[in-house]
Structure formats: C-alpha cells, structure tokens
Image (cartoon, rainbow, N blue to C red):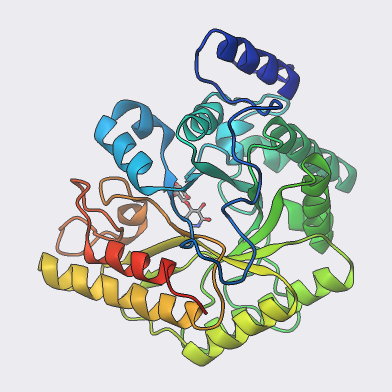
Length: 371
Ligand code: XIL
C-alpha cells in the first residue's frame, strides 16, 4: 500500500470494517477500546500507579519472533517504533507515504492495550535522499507541514505523545549558535521548531508535544553547554508561545561518563519551572567500556542506570520511562558501539533470551519511587 490517497479516512473505514468482521485493527472511532489520551503518560506529580514503562520496538521482529512479541506484551505499557515512523520508512519518496509498518504497530498496541509514542517528525538524521532537493523556504515549510499533517492526523487520538523535535542541539553548543544543521535549519532556520510544533498541535490537538534530546546528563564542559543551550531553547519557545508539553531525556548512558548530579538536577528544575513534563525516552547503557564477564557487567550497567534514575526521580516524577529496545536480542548499540572483545552488547533490561537482568529491577524500583 503506497500512497498519497491512503488517507486517515480510508484507514479508519478499513479499521471499522475489520472490526465489524471481528478482525483486530486500529480504530480511533467512538467507543473503540483504545485508552483515552494521557491516561498513562501522565503529567508530573506523584500518583498511586507506577510510572509507565515502555520500549522502542521493531515491527518486523514483532511479527516474526513470537517470544519477543510476548515479552513486549508482558512488560511494556508503552511502545515507540524504533524506525517505522521516521521519514525514510513512512515518506520514502516525495508525495509517497508508506504506512504498513506503522499501522501494524498501532494495531498491535491497540490489541494489547499498550500506548504508542510517536517518533519522530523533525530530525536532522536519517532523512530520505529526496529531501536534499527541497530548495526554497516555502517548499521546506510545505513539505514539513504536509508530512506532519499527513502522519499525525492519520493517528489522531491514537498516539498521545509525539517526539516532534528530535536532537535539535549541536554536539557542542556555544552562545552564537546552538541548533544543529539539517535540511530544516538550512531552509527555515530556527523557525522550523515552531512550525513543526504548531503543525503537530493542529493535526492532533490532544497529543503531547515533546522535544527529545541526548547528552544532557553527564559531567564535563560539553554537557554543561548542552544543558545551558537546552534551557535557552525552551525559554525562547515559551517566550514565543510555541506549544510544547514535555522534554524527553534520551538517556543513552555510557560506562565511563559520570552523571552530573547537580547539573542534571538544575536542568530538571528549569524544565519543571517552565511547567514542562519530563520523560525518559531512550534509556540504555552502552557497555563497550565494561568488563566482559556477564554478571559483573550486568551489575555495573544496572548501577549506572540507578545513578541516573535516582538523580532524576529525586526532583521529578517522569511521565514515562522507556528504554531504546527491550531485549539485548534487538539493540542499536552494536551498530555504533561494538565491544572490542567481540562479546555481544548487553545494554537493555532483558537479555537476548528475554530473561530479566538487574537493570530491569532498577527500572522497577524507580517506577515506584515518589518525589
Ligand atoms: C536509531 C535506531 O535505533 C537505529 O536502528 C537507526 O538505524 C538509527 O536510529 N537517538 C534517537 C533514535 O532518537 O531515533 C536513534 O535510533 C538512536 C539515537
């Protein structure tokens, strides 16, 4: 199914027919058994229920690996597609959208009463080749807004939280410029942020708008500069009345990078003062610098995550905690951070056989901690 004409309306008609036939399918229709938005990715504030836990998932594996599918169902209250809602998958050519995999995920989630987070709409990375030909400012605005209208409105009422803007900061910001180059920056300048956020709010007025960023938790001048630039960016959006509900801390943690407790807590206090929620969106512990021995390594990984979660949960209750993958069987880490000893990476809460690791217990503990 490739298409421009494959609209939300067609999708919902298909969904309602499928439901009438008793076939499970996504339905944002009145009375559909999809949880109301925001019932689980909640606003900041102590509540009786544990913080929802979730993971990035791979749709192909969900349909081909039944043990993985069962582990996702058993452990996740939230899922986010690792790649299937990114531009190359969903909008591979100009005017051509492909929704099969994203639909499969949304359908899977609805069947299992799992919430979906959307990821991502405005990112510098992983853009399909055709977007390099976007020439003028007007064309860029048309393409960005058109993409957001098409994708977000298709899943309106079904995706209560979107990573609208992903990784907007340069690696090492300074006072002059802190926004990362991208097709959007080069054609629209910093206006691409309000354009994307407003377009998402228009396409689904109930979805929570998230700005997602990485490398803001560690000790060192680069990370301090990133925290400062992030606060400056959030304030400038607020000053211009740009809609935004939450900041996502990706939290790709590393052995050998210490958490800056004061720096991170100051950042969180600024975010809270701006009345924004905090989500942990992509937690994992990159273990390429850790010893090979598995039980020792798993304990160190759990300790690194505990230090981070303790620092965060001391000042704010996150709206959700998601890891970037659920099981070591499916993780992005070896693509970029393969271990020198050739042993498989172990960055996630479940091992490659879906057994719980100490990291799982740490996340469970902090899901239940109240500020
Ligand atoms: C990664 C995926 O895990 C990979 O499979 C893909 O090849 C590249 O992107 N921060 C993000 C995610 O926001 O989208 C990235 O996901 C990991 C870093």
